[in-house]
Each structure stands twice: as C-alpha cells, then as structure tokens.
Image 1 (tube, one colour):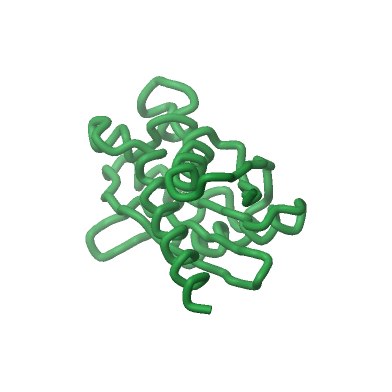
Image 2 (cartoon, helix red, strand yellow):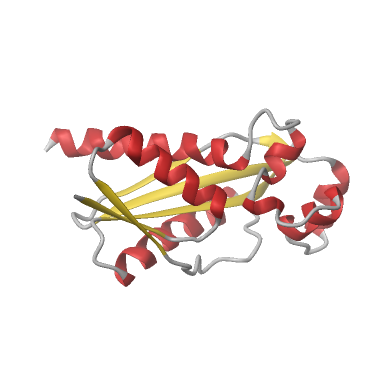
Length: 174
C-alpha cells in the first residue's frame, strides 16, 4: 500500500489529492497533517508559492513514515497585466525525487489586488468580499471569479494530476 502524507488539512486541497491518487493507484492510504510552508501567509510570487509547496511536501514527509509527501500552495503573482492567482504543488518521495507542477491562473479584480498589495491575505479578503466564511476551504477565489465553473479543489486536482504523472514517468524510467 502506498502511503501518502498530505501537508495540509485544507478540505479543498485534501479532496484534490485523494481524488487524484485514488484514480491512479489501487491501494493507497492518506495522512493529513498541518505543516508549515516556511513562506509568507500570503505568497506573493511564483517563486515563493513554489517554495511553500515544496516546503510543505518535505516537512510532511519528515513528520511521517509515508512514501510520498505532497504540498499544495496557493498564491498571487504580479504581471504587466495585473495580479494573478497562482497555485503550485510538490511531490517528494523517499527516493529523493522532488517534483513541482503549477496550475491555472486567473486575473484578480482590482479591489482584491489592492487589498493584497496593502498586506491583506487572500482568504480573509475573499470572505469579506463574498460575505461568506471559509472560502479557501470550499470554492476558493477561483470559484468565485469563475462563477463556480472551476473551484479550488478542481484547480488543485489538475496540479495533483501533473505531479502524479511526472512521478509515474520518472518511476518508469529507472
């Protein structure tokens, strides 16, 4: 049985990881632990978001006896065309493989980008913007700004698929 350690308890992220592995591997077990990303609460670049995902994967693998550690991280990145939502993931295994993959990007409305530039974190900002609580645990900002067509778990599921695919490819090459 393949043991997967998940570096978060966020429902949307956990759901994406479990669904991804269950579709591709018959015997798999999961352990979810809150781990540190060792980056800002609100990652503000692709680089920082990647580092957060990689740190979560490494940290959860160190904390467990799992075969694989997975870290997913959401952030934002500035471009010439405005601020964009970004998301990255990392898979680290006991053989020393470190795999990184990124996902969809959408531009953020000006009022959200301005709040982030003032030091606010996206989760609480989105709760305030939507007058709901726990947006990051459910549809996420991507779900709000795509009218529910792409939700946070779906967005991260794509990243998980990329991670699993790369891991399987590497595994089959050696």
